[in-house]
Length: 138
Image (cartoon, rainbow, N blue to C red):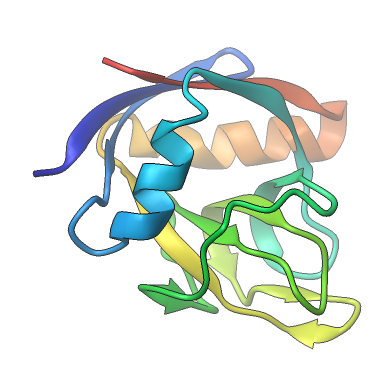
């Protein structure tokens, strides 16, 4: 059964569900890290998204429920490999890529509220810079 999350990004708050059935290993690895705090910055190559750069962080997962085109409100984890590990939140059209080319990430969280605020979050990060983000269980 999916677990409920609260995500606070900058001045915005979203309800979300952890996709425990679609991405069980990624969900379990992320649950171990909750509450999780970091910063989001605007993507460089992928389009309308914000991301958490994670360097060589190893979540101990491989691909599951992976996509290169997350929908607005979908959060994916790229487990690393040809590019650095990262978490990406799509706020509009995304073609998930890096300087190495197209990538795929595990869709493991779906936002369930305030989707009308996603574009404002994205443009805030684009024009005002990095914003804090916090993931926690409800």
